[in-house]
Image (cartoon, rainbow, N blue to C red; front, side, top):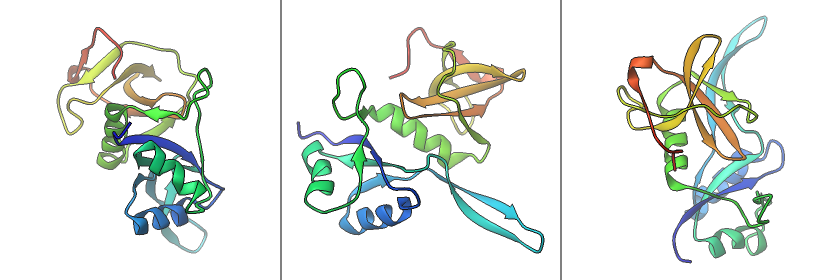
Length: 172
């Protein structure tokens, strides 16, 4: 298959940025889920980049080329596998685009527990997150839309109820 797809790669702890820099240098499309936060110590405040999904980087490419990154280029990564099929996990394009869009557009994101109960599948109809699809949950009485990359991560964003429409099927 010659279609470019998103793959989930594991890295060693604290190696995410180095691997991203190496992939960028090689011209390989990748995404690292980071957020800038202000941390405060007794004597100062400092902006730091925080990994939202430690030890994980998303890599987009043709499967054989992505697999060659480890085998031929020596990049220390391993790939997430689907537990039932044992095949290397591929993240659907729509899920990945929604995930990146939400993380890039808002700071009001929390990484949610993957053991959430499934609710209604919804689409956001207004605002900067318009057309993003996800799952509706109520957390502490607030409406949140959860965008999942199945088996990897889920992020939750608070959305006004008036900005949500129910879908008949699960988002792609």
